[in-house]
Image (cartoon, rainbow, N blue to C red; front, side, top):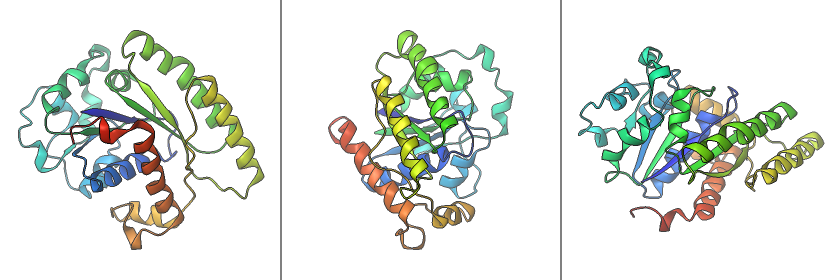
Length: 253
């Protein structure tokens, strides 16, 4: 079972949309996927369950509740109960240990993280195999990505998870016709290279269809025919990610 984590400290960056696209796209390719939502806003949970209440929550997972019926929904959801967790006492390896019993049921776990680096985020990174960093296209985002790679990821790899792979930076809300966007893409590529990772070749363009799908809790990639620019972009990104990490040869399938 491989763990894919989507992370950015900035809100409104397309983090949850990227997690949802990965969940849908990889599931359609035959992977057994578990969605794990660590953000108390629960947007990832809502996007998968279409607004229904999750049968199992992160609190259940960390409190060793019986998850034998989890595969009926394949979602460990976030609720406001997350605010009740005493993160200062959370063991770094809590998620790693809690997820171990689920290893035989899933090929991939997709984790959506909160827009902050807290103890729960660190625990997620300590079990992560592949880290994806969505970023919009401005100089402050490049600075934020550099800080994550320089400080957070470096410490995680050094102290807790030497096998963590930064799969790459995914540029969202991109317009190739804007000169500044192309210049800032170059800046992000420079930052990525400095930390031995990359910017994905695929970029995600703006799309009304994506916003509409999220608004009505529809499937992201198939909404309204699935032919908008961003929907095609996300499908291309998923293909690039699979090929980049050779997932077919590294999962149970």
